[in-house]
Image (cartoon, one colour):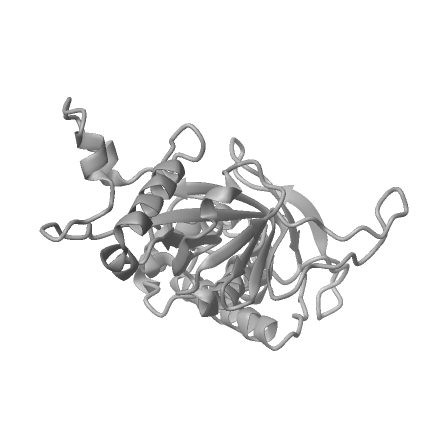
Length: 318
C-alpha cells in the first residue's frame, strides 16, 4: 500500500478543493452510496500516516440562510445521507438520542431554528485506506501503463470521482472507503509531522521486539512502510532481525534520524515528479557491491514482510 509520503501527496492534491461543493459523483465503489455525496460541501481534509480523511457536510451559513422550501430539501437530503442501512452516515446527536418522543428524531436533525445553535461538528468524515496501487488524481484520470492479461490497454477504473462546482475533480483509485466519526490523529507518531516525538520513537525501539516489526508498528511510526523500513535499516547498518532492546543508543538514534530524513526526501522528490534511488530495496547488490539477500522476515507468530538486506553491511544485534 502507499506509504506516508505518497498519502501526504494525496492530501496536498485534495486540499485545494476544500470549500467547494460536490456537483457530480461517479466511480465503481459499492462500499458506500456514492450518490449521497452529491450536493454536500467538501469541508476539510486531514492525513495521518497511511490514512486520508475527507469531511463532507452542509455549510452552516447555507443552513441558517436557507428559505423554508430549501430547508425542507436539505432536511430530506440529510435524512437520506444519514440512513444507517446504507452508509452508516449518522450524526452523533442521533446516535445519542434515546427519547421515545416521536418528534425527537426530526428535532435532532441538523437544521437550526432562530432560537437554536448549530451543532459543533455537523460534518461526517470519509476514511480512505489505499491498496497496493492506490492513488489520488487531481483533474486527470489514470492511464494504462501496460496491457492487461488479455492484451487490452484498459485504463484503471476509479473507485470514486468527485466533481466540484469549481469545475475541477478528484479521482480515487484502488482504495477502501468507510464513514467514520472523525480522524484519530496523533501527530507525535507521524513520521512526516513536525510534531513527531523523537523520544517516544526511541522508547519504542527499546522494546524486546524485532527492529523490523517495531518500525512497521503504526502506533509509533505512522506512515512508515516496507520500502522505508528496508532502506533505513540498511542506512543505519542494522540487521532487520535485531532485537530493539539490544540496539546501541547511537544505532537507535541513527535509525530514527534516517526514518525522518528518508521520508522527507521521498515526499520532496514526489512533489518534484522525481523518483528515489534505493540502496537495497529490490536490488541484487548494495552500493559496496555485496550481495543483497531477500526473504520474508518478521516475528515468529506475526506478519512477515518481504525484506532486502545486506548481511555484510548490517549488524545483527541478538
